[in-house]
Image (tube, rainbow, N blue to C red):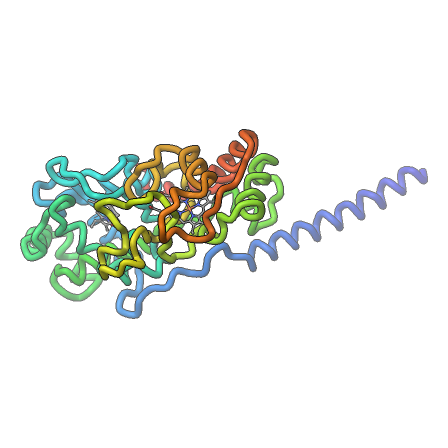
Length: 333
Ligand code: HEC
Ligand code: HEC
């Protein structure tokens, strides 16, 4: 009898605890956000119709001179909007100077491009369209070409109340890019939503290495895993042709400075660095563990360290837990 009552009380108490845990979880899910809402420029508020127009343009090969290359040729959804190549290939197989970066979460960037010099996504969109090695398109000719597509002209009228023009083109592509959010990795569930089981022990140990033993979070801090700043991570002693941000203002202090890339979805975005020179995360970890190449302007933060092979695996496992492919729901047929 007693035992029974005790059990009843026990299960009653257990129920209360479970229920309060459940409510606590719900509360924390409601209040915790991984990122702030994306800020839209005042002259480019978002709407579903605008995003749809931007999406159609992003995937449209007619944006290039010979109808062969779209934005998505170099920014493939399944590779977190990168292309898996060392450097990208534009029209006629022409090679770009750099590796294609992810477009996911680009709405949060304070500056765009590896040189951290363009202030907005709207301005960025014009660059690949006109670049000889990318889409090689004359803007005036492109507008005539796209205005003649009835769906585009109709959408321009309906969304913007004007004819299809560069404003419509750049605003809608940028609105589409701002809709590409990826912040639901297993790391996010562990770190922001308190789900202790979301990461394996090895991944948790890797996170400790990344954030405590090593110095990675100095430049790749959560939630975005980038400081948004340009830094010199000592990739080379001599940067050769591509000196990074230096090419914008010719300021010698900018030699070797590149915008710190986000490490979200890093397992999907090899090869690495602005020139795609590192094929694997092993190469990257080796680079940092050797303390960088020792460029004159290399950041003081990058110093040699030692990890045993087991710890290298833990660090890589942690980086793998930054993958979140839930954004792909919007890109499946
Ligand atoms: C031929 C390949 C290619 C095409 C086509 C292309 N891109 Fe890119 N994209 C790149 C490369 C390479 C970079 C890095 C350039 C740099 O930083 O100097 C880049 C950079 C970007 C960035 C900056 C991301 C960041 O982290 O700063 C955005 C945004 C972007 N592209 C959007 C687009 C859009 C929109 C289009 C179509 C209008 C497009 N791209 C077409 C290869 C391409
Ligand atoms: C001083 C700032 C700084 C620190 C500290 C730093 N990084 Fe980086 N990281 C960068 C910069 C800048 C780049 C891009 C360099 C380039 O493109 O040439 C980069 C690139 C990377 C990349 C390649 C990303 C891509 O998409 O190509 C990985 C991976 C990476 N870092 C991991 C780490 C790890 C792991 C640590 C800690 C051991 C670390 N970083 C510490 C600044 C830093």
